[in-house]
Image 1 (tube, rainbow, N blue to C red):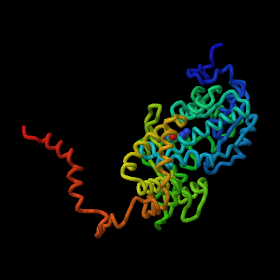
Image 2 (tube, protein in one colour):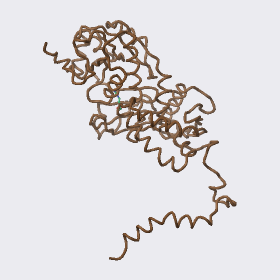
Image 3 (cartoon, helix red, strand yellow):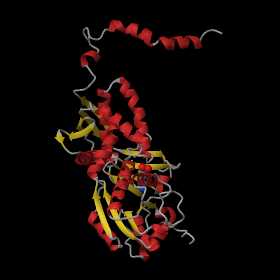
Image 4 (tube, rainbow, N blue to C red):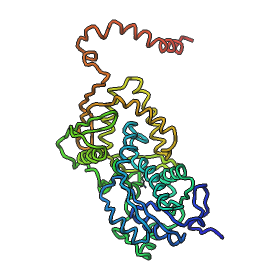
Amino acid sequence: MSPDPHIGAPTASYEADPEAVSRVLLLYSGGLDTSVMLKWIQDRYDAEVVCLTVDLGQPGEDWEVIRAKALRLGARECHVADAREEFAREYVARAIRANALYGGGYPLFTALGRPLIAKLAVEQARASGCDTIAHGCTGKGNDQVRIEATIATLAPELGVIAPVRTWQMGREEEIAYAREHGIPVKGGSEAVPYSIDDNLWGRSSEGRWIEDLAHAPEDDVFELVTRPEEAPSQAQVVTLSFERGLPVAIDGTPMGLVELLQRAGELGARHGVGIVDHIEDRIVGLKVRDIYEAPAAGIILPAHQDLERLVCTIHQNQFKPELERQWAYLVYAGLWWEPLRADLDAYMEHVNECVTGEIGVKLYKGSARVVTRASPNAVYDASLASFAASGGLFSQSAAPGFIELWSLQSRLAWRLRNRPR
Ligand code: ARG
């Protein structure tokens, strides 16, 4: 049989053989792509579809509405997994300990969410007797890498299909298909929307004018964070308490991590914190621009980093950023299950054993600046560091001897390079 050109022949070992697709677990968001997909898979593959929607704390979703929509479009089952707790504990917590920022600015919220979503898809596919997992990622992004690498790692017995990569429909055709099949199209078909992804740790926007590098951000892209120009003109200082590298209280009120991330997100959003206009190197070779709103990360990461700097030695402080960069790169690149990631986490955890204390952060019109620090583990002695006389503990008379030996090699090298010829 000649392959359906809208399905295509598999190139990778984990891609489903179209003939073998009979019950599909679809990662369903309720949006246009995955709603069209829900019908399209039933049509093209003559397969049953089971839907899974994962709650990672994306604001403003009505899970019941999404579930009802899936069932109305023919899903045999629709499951909504509340994964906020697991996401916070197992993914965001590690990112905090690793001060994780890809490319110097992206706090990785999407990249952290994908391996968890794909892991839950594997679990649900097995529980619901599915042979295949379908997702709505395009062939140009990082998300396909993260999801498929996870499935191929955790469940080699399952096949994967990615209809958006093969179905050769643009937005217009998708809308036409939706109309034809009685799929409601939210907000009409005129305005092309931004491509959004969000969760507890942040929100990204892509597409439209964002692709024009000379175009400064338009106001309507910011849905989470108050524009700094409109943020309160009264600064607010918030105190974050950390225990072993993780935030546990805000302004003295203890809370679980999910709630704390939400609360920090609200505070940051109010003050315009966490906007990042980012040029990014995707793993598939493309260079793109993203607009990020990550108000919780915009407060918590600088506070954590500052506390870590206070309780660690100069050698730890010099070394850790190199591992952090590698950690962020692996996670960005979809290799969450790579053993090196866990090796690096072991290091991050060990260092963070002593990252306990309190950090005051001043929020004001888009900035989050650390203004106070306190820790029982600070490698800091005010009397030693003081410009005032420090008694006998720090011997200033030892300083010249230190300088002589410390600079010895550099001086010798300088002399060699500058000798008269
Ligand atoms: N550029 C970010 C990343 O690769 C965000 C991607 C957002 N994904 C999406 N499907 N809109 O992680």
